[in-house]
Length: 178
Image 1 (cartoon, rainbow, N blue to C red):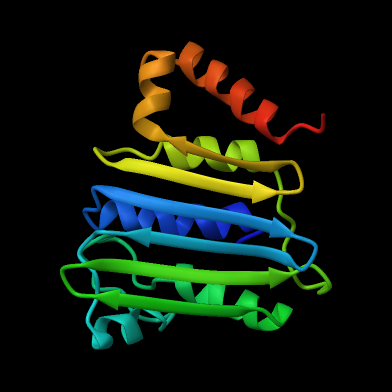
Image 2: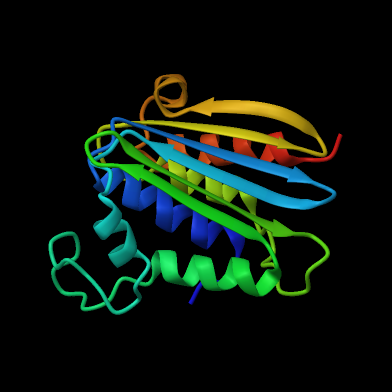
């Protein structure tokens, strides 16, 4: 089960990385109206048939996660968004990539909490693989953009605990009130 906004975002971004994307763009837009998320990748993409299967909680192709018999990420997201009265869309083209967008209205008691956005961003930047992750954040404290390659270069890679601690402090400072 997903407990916060970050759970949905990480699940979809991980799917994008596992789909062979060389670039994943995550937009996190917070406003008085709610939270809008867009995740775009240039991975394998899906046909209309594959897209329909991805929305079926009882379907798994057995290749990405061989031990799983179900794929719950997108079905959980769709259920949560619809329960909260939000909107969602999934656009995909085989061989081109996928774009998932969704929003949770702030007025809905069923919208999940945003949670610790610095930890979400750290999780996005540290997914395993060789790819560029770009996180664009806008909200009540302004806007910023993070690029995985630039941050890894600045802190000396994303493999060492000391580098991750430094990066976590930096990300937390981006979310602090002035």
